[in-house]
Length: 487
Image 1 (cartoon, helix red, strand yellow):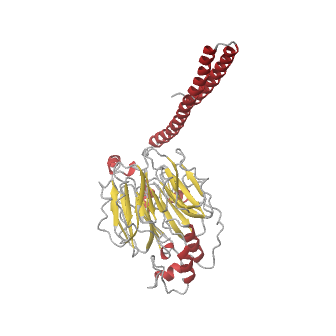
Image 2 (cartoon, one colour; image 1 turned 30 degrees about the vertical axis):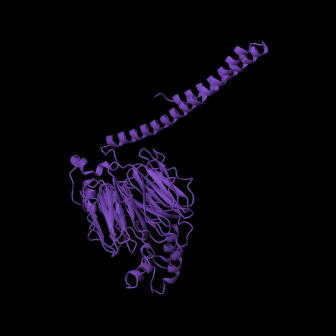
Image 3 (cartoon, one colour; image 1 turned 45 degrees about the vertical axis):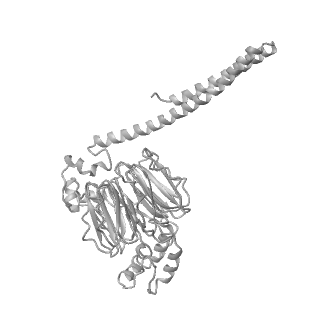
């Protein structure tokens, strides 16, 4: 299709319509003045037909214009893919980690940071200063929330962790002397994965969210599968399960779940983790983790947040996406394609891993309450309910600046989803599978975005879904009694 064909069709439609109408009316008036009613009626009809023909032609032009716009986006994406392939990378953020694609690259056991550095031909000194492979301070602003700097992060967490009277995540009951004020505010807070109110409480009290409310979601959307935690702590799954990512029926006492491309991770109520699915990069090797309060799964790696605000990671570390061992004071984590983002209590961001599309290197955010990492873009939820985004925008997945009153965010492969305070949901980005068709959703309390599908959890414990259902990843209508974190 030639460039600007749609615009040309619209211009031709307008010209034909207006010229035809004027010519017809002029002729009709001429013959009417001469008393020739037959020809006057003929030209009047001609004028009307000209106007009527203009409308469908104009609409056809508009459709052609939209198609051209989509083609331009696809060309931009194709150019990006060609560039990645030219540099020896894989064409799809998800396909790289598919076992079927591993013929070009044998699975290797997890290696140390030193071994990984040597394998990439980078010296230790270079690694420390190379922004693509080292943790970066991404915000110069502390935001608008004051922190008591005299009390180190984790003081309250330490009290909770060492006490037999931890705050129960369901009842919010505790006998800890310092906790009543937290408990009172927590009871009225809006609990979701990325609760602004919870983060505010968390920051002021220097604690980890787990002890006020579950800090990870009870629903998760992976590459081609969906998982959800029931009220009884069991896990349900649907979708592509060839590599065992849906083998979760035996899990019990699960508090939260995370889904990667072909693997699933569960956070148990005792702070340990379980995982199933493809583990060619070691992304399922989380059995030794302890005191975990939040989890996040990338395409080929898994990240855990400890109660003391530090992090652990397992899986592919080609781009340094697992180099989180030096992080401290973290209150939320999000694992993207081949990078990892952490949120600190002061609203600043840290990140490691690939920055091929500026998915974190250009971040200068402050007052951030939640983050979501997608395929090649990152979303930030600010304390005023607005959103910011950076990274690949080939499908307008970063066009979130107009969103307001947002309570939670989720990022898919090439689309972005926002949960509003009124329970409605908004979405932008690639919609080839209908993954952005969420405008009719109501009473939603949590969201999750997968490769090309979107999941929503309602207040009643039911799941909503839209998008790609090739492998049944959206077949969640029969899921019931899904755990809804306290509202």
